[in-house]
Length: 149
Image 1: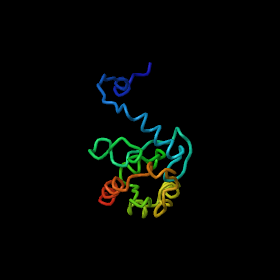
Image 2: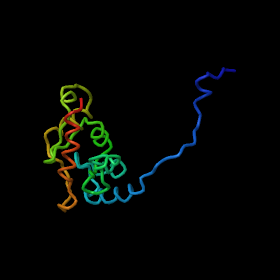
Image 3: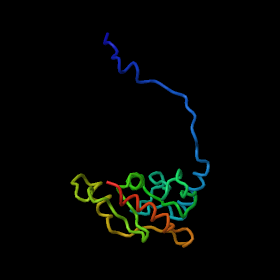
Image 4: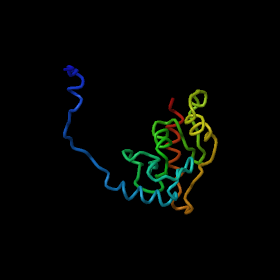
């Protein structure tokens, strides 16, 4: 008989925890997806299961209102890059990629999915002006992007 390793015997452990759920999130997602016609603002990917309603200013921030004007439809890679300040969006809706990543050599996702979007306008914006990203919220987010890395 093969002995069970100490690591394997501890892999299946559980914890019951209390969580805080944002009850407004499903409604915000539906509104953002409708406004962006279920396409990523950055690359125009149109697969709903790969898209998120990203907050321009985080929900936890006082300025991070639950409004379509504080939202962008983004594919999961662009949303993650936006949240960690690899990707920024200027108030005039231009995508920027952090300089250190522009200099990095890696695979096709970095090259085509991120670096090629640098300096380009968002590919999708809401048709209704009242649903477009708030320039002041973009400015707050962009300032954090500029100070990162």
